[in-house]
Length: 163
Image (cartoon, rainbow, N blue to C red; front, side):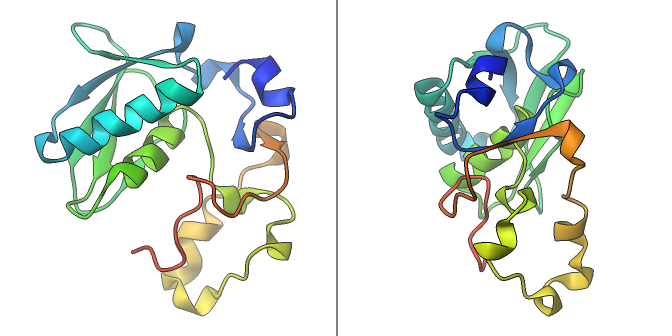
């Protein structure tokens, strides 16, 4: 997203301020090593192409790219890290999961990291193993943009019973 998009007030979400972790020229190169989820992955990329100015282009020899791989969990690094960057998708992943993990790869952070989230959700810390997942996802204000209020139906907020 551009600086204007992040500050225009027309978007909802939270993302990185750092321009160094954004994909140059709004082009995200990709490889799909996880062929079992290929339809969901393609649908997720089309989602972003519909609602943003990002374009997903199949990798040929580009150095920086995302690689969708089968895994036991769902995860992605935050923003463009440089080089091969895995997006891990479990066997239970679906289009929404792929949209969420691509969101991280393009610099979007979890909705629960927004200030004021406690007015919108209740976190039952005892239900989170060590609370690690939630606690490690808080970012200092200087590294993030918060656009609009907490958005309960954001793709960057997992379902209450997500595993």
